[in-house]
Amino acid sequence: MNETVSLPAAAPEPKKRTWLIWPAAVALAVALYFGLAYLADVFTHESTDDAFIAAHVVSIAPRISGQVAAVHVLDNQLVRSNELLVEIDPADYAMTVEQKESAAEAQQASYKTMLAGWELMQAKVTTAEADVRKTQADADSAEATAKKTQADFERAQDLLKQSTLSKQEFDTTQAANTKAQADLKSAQENVAEAGSRVEEANRTLAAAWAQVGTVMAQWHEAQTNIAAAKINLSYAKLFAPAAGRVTRKSVEAGDYVQAGQQLFSIVPVEVWVIANFKESQLEKMRTNQPVTVEIDALGGRKFAAHVESIQAGSGAQFSLLPPENATGNFVKVVQRVPVKILFDEPLPADHVLGPGLSVTPSVQVGKLDFPAWALALVAIIIAGVSALAFSFATGRKAG
Image (cartoon, rainbow, N blue to C red; front, side, top):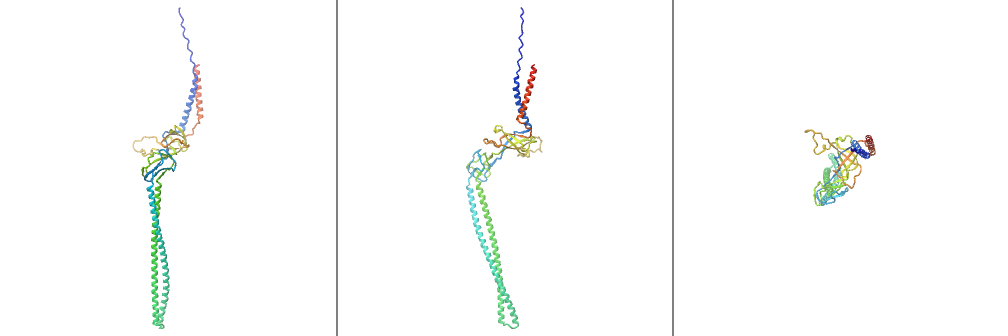
């Protein structure tokens, strides 16, 4: 008896899992959002990872030599402006101030002595001038007497010729005339002598005044020496020129330091960014353009900033050994140009940010800036349309 072998019925086709389409659409929307944001950033921003924080590093060095008496700061300590940092033993410089003051007092005493001598010579000049006036008056009187006796003598000569005057009277008149002429000559010589004494006194007075001027100049020099000594004494205390943190401290109490020797540095709290952009990135870059600075030391935290200035020349041109392209074979190398970027918001005070820390600035060089909601809307629309299209295509294939 032949048995009929029946084949098993075909298993029904499994139902397609269309529910996976919409989660995939959500994932696509997220990917599209970040992709569109990246594209918008690429077209409107210039960024570089060759950027670092910079600051004015102030080197602290003494202006005088001496032994350090005290150091009032520690490594990495935050100091205020004008805060006392280091003291140098002031004993030698205080002694120098006392010596200069003693020398100035001696110069002042010499000045007073010379001034008194000059005043005495002034009195002598006055006396000599009075003697000149007196002798001149005597000479004028003698001249008048001499003129009278000369006239009497001439009349006596005429009378003697006429025999109306005795010989004795003539001799008396002649003797009086001779004496008057001698007295006149003596008075004139006295006037000349008194004048020479006045001239001598004036010369002595001028010499005394010159000595007074010399001593006065020496006294002024002594005052300048005192001021210089006091300045050196004030240099025994070193104060902070600006607020900041102490770095690379290399001085302790008891050390002997030389003038100009670097003891440590102070890094001010005011910092900025130096970003070395490629020269091809500078086409649209201008000052005051907004910047977003991402700081690595803060876990990638971003801060608002702006472009302050662009250096007039590449960094390599201002290096210690600038390239000399006129010699040898030339290979074009893309140059980098330092750009200074200033922060627009304060940095966190609880973190230490100093020169050399790495940052990533992104400069907005264009105005194509879509808001986040617009990018999200476009991503949702594209993902939704794609999901609907895929769902429709899957349904037709199943039918």
